[in-house]
Length: 244
Image (cartoon, rainbow, N blue to C red; front, top):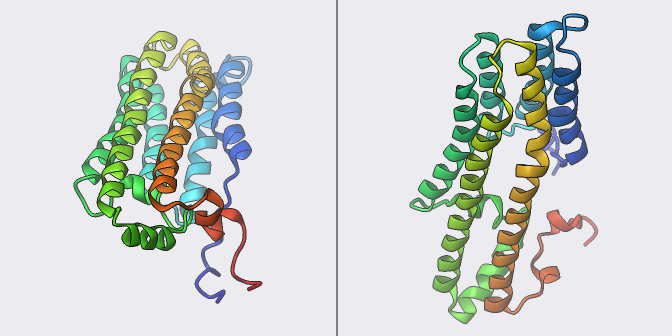
């Protein structure tokens, strides 16, 4: 039983560690240590971005999280460093900030034309819900077509959250990062943007994602008659089948 998992450890979400390593530490380094009396522009940028870059690579290697969203995150941090180190016009930072969520949103839309829409992979999957039980109830009630239609709508809503992120990222980057790249002011503004992006973009996006899950859940409840407790995945609820 343990052989399938011995070389790939379980990935347990650690939001506070993610927040500390990807947002707070880099922001503090960029805003407070970019002066010549401390690390200087180049070293502050390298060390500040090394935290989210290193953490992203660690997650990819350690937990085999080789999904394209995780890879895009690592690429995004690398591009930010490249813009600062190569002293490319700061307007390209805004383009890059908008491009990453836009690419993800487009991927969500394109996936609706395939057998495996991303919303199914991320929200309607056996790690979150008891998919087999739900599908069986849908078949018994003849509601599969209606459910698939609702799942498609959820995919469009899901893509919309990334469109929101793309627009907000662009506005925020153009508003906050106005100094030439490669300068102390650029580093400080980049740190400020990283901090501000969490309450202004990440939290609203998270609320939208929760709303999409609630929409999906309301659909499941109406079409199957099951309560959330009845269809939540044993993996998600923390109850395995070990003791049964």
